[in-house]
Length: 118
Image (cartoon, rainbow, N blue to C red; front, side, top):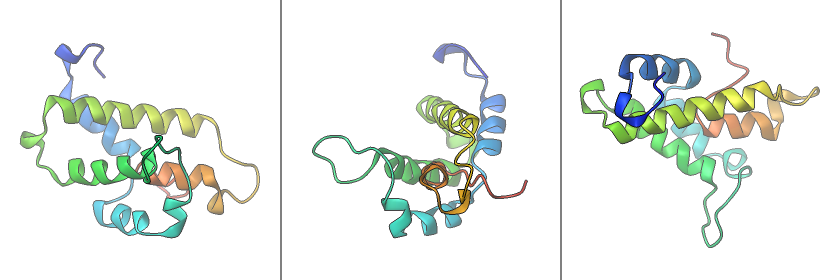
């Protein structure tokens, strides 16, 4: 991927984003509507919705755009999503019951289901 914002490698960012976000917009929206989705994440003071839940809605919007309609801001955000997913996957999650873990739920809010086979 690119280093500076002026040097956005759009094809590489789209590729990495596509690998990191393995949930479809419809499945992500369905997930975001669940109590489990709303049960995890950090919330800014004074806000009622967790950051990851907000991110999920933004990811849905980005995934629904045509490549030609994506802005530099979208590409920067896609890099942020890729970084988040990679960092949290590196944690490995809990040894027991990954399926019902806060670790998985948080990743799913960001569009990645770690239990989904490629």
